[in-house]
Image (cartoon, rainbow, N blue to C red; front, side, top):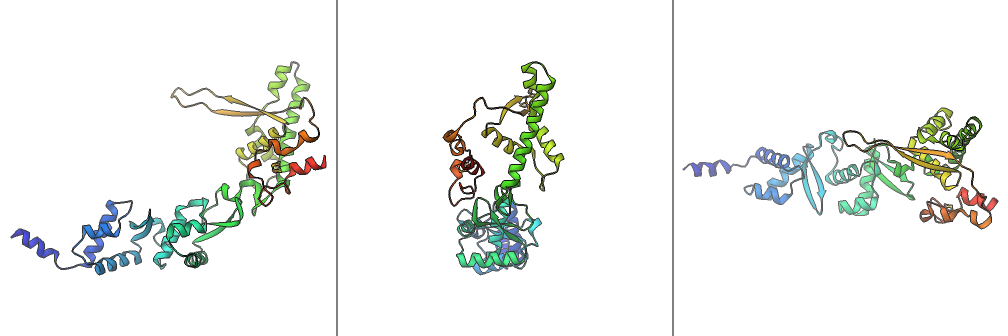
Length: 316
Ligand code: SF4
């Protein structure tokens, strides 16, 4: 008898029960719930009722429709973006979510198409809509000058997209790099000259001529020659170019490990050096020791036409 009552209670279809149960299912499965899971859980509701309930949950921004692998799943709405795409259709929500997941590295339109299974014309239209609502933005990537990546409007693009301090509007700031290059070398050279003048033994002179990358960074920061805020890593990149030029050498000093077993710190020290013999002619050709040789091509961002090392070599 009790069994009959239970069956009878299930008969009247309450749309609100269906919506509550879908929300519960989504809560229990944070990775998402697909249509077949909803069907298995609630076989008493027909397809039309399920679709209506899902549409209501989507339109009231309680769940998201996302792509997971090759299937579409429903997930509880991320509260931080609950109101962001309100009023958008499902395709727009899918594209927005794909872009959101790409973070500040952004995503190519080709990958958005692949992940959303939408046609190029549809994706283009959606991207334009999202851009006009200032939900996303297109950013030119230094990795390929003709390609744009899409990311959420409020995000600061990753250095791999903007090229960091060395790029302005996707253009390599070769003059700025050259000035920094000269100033870093000047600092190290003066330190070495000072050590030679004030200390008597070669070992003491050598030790005193080293400066850490943080010291060089402080010197450059105090000069105030950079419009952008430079990090110590930026200065290390410049110092690396001086090493490749044979003007500077580097020494790594490892600090002691802590008692807790954590590995010790590493300090990079640099000093200006004088090459023992001056290279001449062909041996000066920069490409043989160039660290970006594999990225260099005639129509690329790094090219022999714009290369300052090549220009110097040809002018020599
Ligand atoms: S042209 Fe310049 S950037 Fe290109 S490989 Fe030679 S040195 Fe490197």
